[in-house]
Image 1 (cartoon, rainbow, N blue to C red):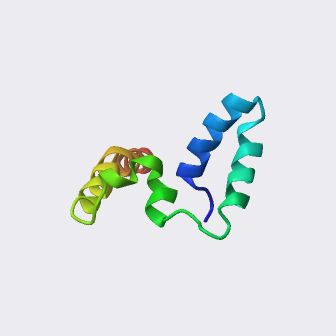
Image 2 (tube, helix red, strand yellow; image 1 turned 90 degrees about the horizontal axis):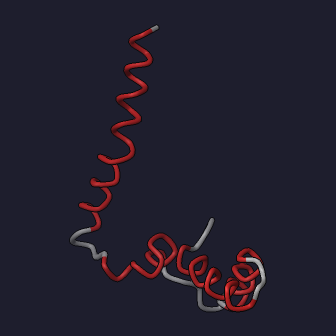
Length: 83
């Protein structure tokens, strides 16, 4: 796991309450959950993981590709055509 969105979000709340850094709180939460880590969906989507299910996850991925990847591909092609 490179980063857990659920833990990072909870670390934000904990840092606001405690006055410590979010990073410090995040590391503390990860240590607390070593024996019971978050699911892959929680790691990727955080607390919003329940709004995704196997029926609509492909739709959400395609929406993200359309929004972020395709514009970058088009920009790369336009730059290549200028050369």
